[in-house]
Length: 121
Image (tube, rainbow, N blue to C red):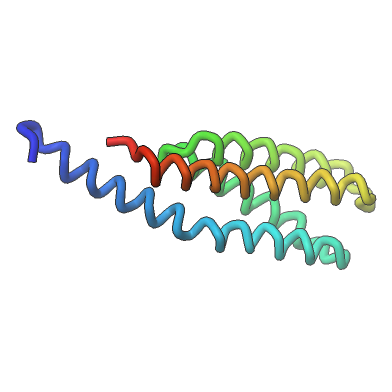
């Protein structure tokens, strides 16, 4: 342990970060499932997508993964715009939402590679 006692805190944070990344497939599954429900005209799925993206926008940076936050925030804002328009979604809307889900998926992959290769201390 170092003199100022930060090592246990750093180790605890590393464990939390590892758990966050271990849960990332479930987060992506939630997004994909909500998008699938939205395609079947389940309107509650749009609110679910917005909530899931909002959660990622808040949590990514807290765990040291700012790209997850950035992608989650951009996606949340896109969903909010669609919800505010109060119109039927078209193919382009679904394509854009799918790209946001893929963007979050890529952000998690990048975070996992960075965490495995060079975890911050």
